[in-house]
Length: 456
Image (tube, rainbow, N blue to C red; front, side):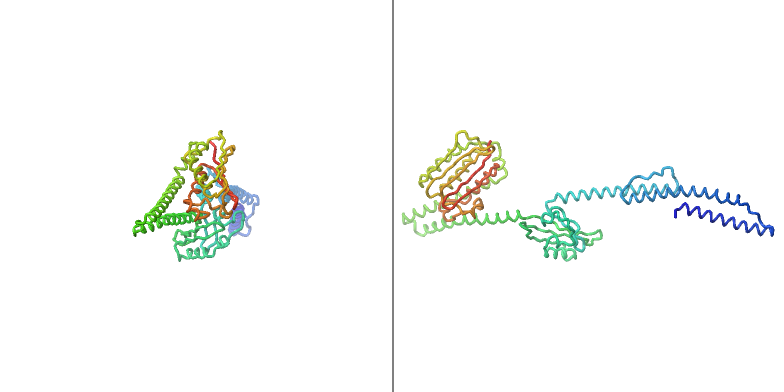
């Protein structure tokens, strides 16, 4: 029942009771003749005040209904101001306080929305995966990166616990320890598909310092572990490559000091070997310095700068070395370079070294037959083809031939004086100027290296 009817009914009841008591009192005072009742006066006495009370209570009811609807709007997130500017009573004061509360709640909601949007943008833009769980281990947040790690994008399924997401019972066990306070934090590295990921677990503390959940930050350390493995292998390979000639030199020097120097033939033989091993060490150190220089950031900028060069001129610089090497082995060198070849975006010294490394390799691993260098002009690149009729390379090891110190035939490579760095240097040169290099080979037929170098 609305308030206006309650007030009107209360007024009528109280007024009727007052009239009844008045009539009883007057009847007792006047005696047996009684009191004559004028129903028109009684009706007027009841209806006029009732109408006034009804009008006032209706006005009051409408104002209270507005307050009720305003509170409902605030609960729904509609913070439109309520206007009772003509009212100065308690309801007007309450309305002003309600408007002030509405503005305060609106500011809190806006700030919370902005913080939520900011946090959502941060989480969405992070490369690290982030997963949050509550105090019982139930998943409450998973960002896009974590979904990619665990390959659950687009599934739209509700996750009850972390095990449904990671399928890693050990990680689940560590999270339970952190949630129970047995560990302040935890770290676990594991394999997910082809990735190596490191998960760092830290507790979420409430205002009272109690553990209310945990957050797991997942880092993709695949590339880092790969680089660490390459570094380890590189150090081991360098150590081996340096130790082998040094051991040989040390052994022959000790033999000479023990009296072998008195035999001229033996002495000359040992000194020749020492010289060869010393030259091998020199070539190794020079190749290491060249590779370090090419891999450096400044060198990459230098290679991709405005320096240009001609294939013909670069070949003329290395031609005497290649021709003499090939003639000594009885190998024919075929070079087809047209006179109007466009210039390349690479320094002439670097291009000469590239040609020398690939042609020297071709001659070195060809017992008989021919070696060739052909050039074709494309729209954006010049296509250089380095081929030979040598022994060929097994197909299964072709992806590895550009690795540092990798040799197809280690014994033969050392006999030829190779350091195992030549193809790695070439690959870094080509990629440093935005080019491409590839290789095809067939056992007993030969090998073909192709380089696409950008035109100037």
